[in-house]
Length: 116
Image 1 (cartoon, rainbow, N blue to C red):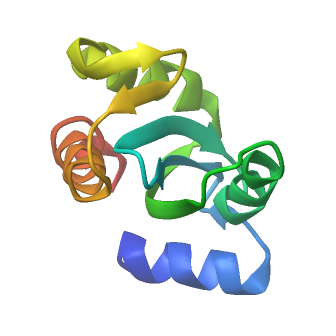
Image 2 (image 1 turned 180 degrees about the vertical axis):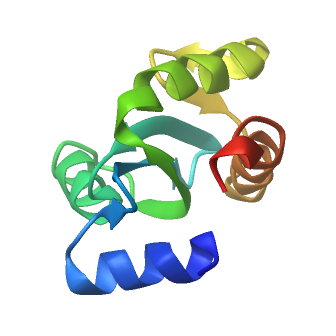
């Protein structure tokens, strides 16, 4: 089963297992001001709702990719390091939603191909 189908099924069933790995997600959440937040969560949609509560700006989930739970912090650090030149504050980066989706896709191709 390919990863996209597995992740879709896992989300739909509320189960996050792929083989022996518990899955987490790296995500990109954007606002309308040209900022994106790259982080991780077991449930990116729930994380979006939690962030929205504290934000006056409309936020939306742009992209997410599945990663094994035991390596999610390592991958998040790598993601932040790759795009450090765009960092504005904390986990927020100066890039459009489209660019954020592209960056996360690029990251998945370059760093997560061994996970497939």
